Length: 549
Image 1 (tube, rainbow, N blue to C red):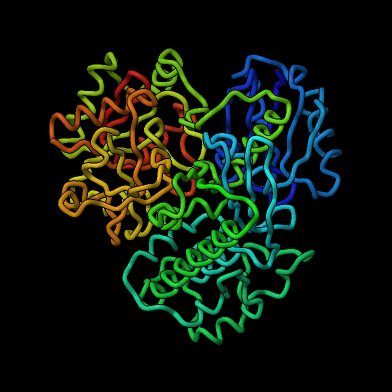
Image 2 (image 1 turned 120 degrees about the vertical axis):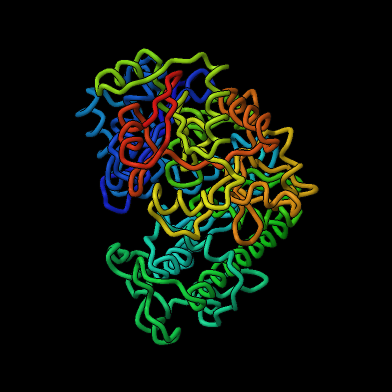
């Protein structure tokens, strides 16, 4: 079987979410994001040197043992030579390089781990290899492109421009726009004209965009707006300044943008169903697929029997997609359904203890069965804790191994976490992690759709009689970005929630990522200690050790 190293990144400012994935013996061995090593979010403009070293180490091989390096960027200028120079300089050897299309890599990242025999696929983001949205059909014979949209007709660009107008950073804060959209407000007629949608297609109103945003032209810098003065003139209000108040006007902008995005996706679904291919399954990837509310609308529509959203839908997932595509090509793939994203760094108790001693931190060691009971008791008493345990999550969501956890029953904990821990806007929601066997007691899931709710990529509807019980995790629109926790996937986190349930009769915990504002999720024990001593955390668990203030 072939050993394949997938990578993403680049040497230009617009290249981001640098990452690496290694597939060996038909299995995903390791995945890593460069930001976790450099501590610079999204790791813009770099190739994933540290991530590659980590993946090779996890596979216990040298670069000479890699058969192919796959890079998602088929149209990048001189990319083969750049990668050859990079590997020869940093690793003293360069395997055979394969370049594949950006959106084909996104599509592969979802389909080849969906468990579906056949599927429609929608990939959508700002832009990649000169395309922004691509529709595919896939079966065991391969992935076939149906149609595509090029920039400026980009759903990612549209949502990014609105995110900017609302005073946030695009390619980072789109989740804030989505959160604001949940508030009940009127429709904004000008924003509804930004994205023109018919029964057959969609297009962006280029009259509202900076003139440089056209095929073959450079984007404005991130210090400049994507929208132009004409848009401001038509909407009759200036763009919001970050940290200023948010009134009903800005709420209406967010709501209209979200509704337009959802409407555009249903138009894309019609295109898929009107194609020559037929399927009852749907896969999603690309940065837009991180919009959990959009994914929720698709799941609850019952347009399909099954839906799979790639949990690492951003460009960080391109390394996985590229590796999967080539592995499948060479019959080196033995994967059905992706059931975990725990592919990152892991530290032994010995390594953790060494770091705790180095920084002179007091700690107590407990066996795991006792430790989970202690954690649950502290959370039930109102304390806020953190978990640093096992392999790090690949992707943007902390799923119990690099998490801050709290009591979901508290009416005040959401504001405390947003203000004192995350230092972010109070309207942003937190996620509930619920035991698999109790999930349907708290949430109304789609009747006929099998969707992957275990990765915090799809919002679920709360059952009204349970709302007050997990109030800290429920958004204003009565949905939650749920994580279903399964015992065989994460037994330690599962047992914490189970023990909490014994104490409180609530089998849910509030879960958010273990990081500080502006920084990636923590990778090392030292990273975790930095968060612990610079936030109001009451306690932290690192491996089998617990520390407290």
